[in-house]
Image (cartoon, rainbow, N blue to C red):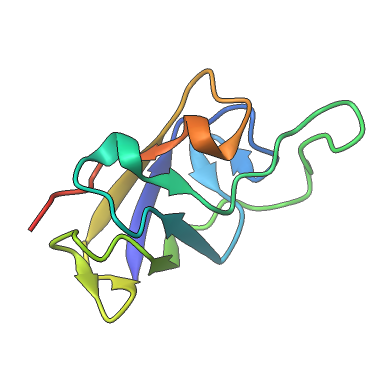
Length: 104
């Protein structure tokens, strides 16, 4: 499993720069650079869907990856030891990126 750092503070799954989900999806099937990827599991936290304070951040996650051009993509699973999802001001999944993407 991969450790994940996430600075997407507007995501309802983010707590303490970690993700509370046990698995996430990275999108970007034809990506050649990190800004052509995004977190497919992003869900905007708003007044209706506030962050769940009872959720616990996960240290290790299973990461499904559609970024077939990434060196860490092994049969649609991320093989990196650690990745970072970025998007400090993101309000939508398209404003997030897998900052650890490396093109083959």
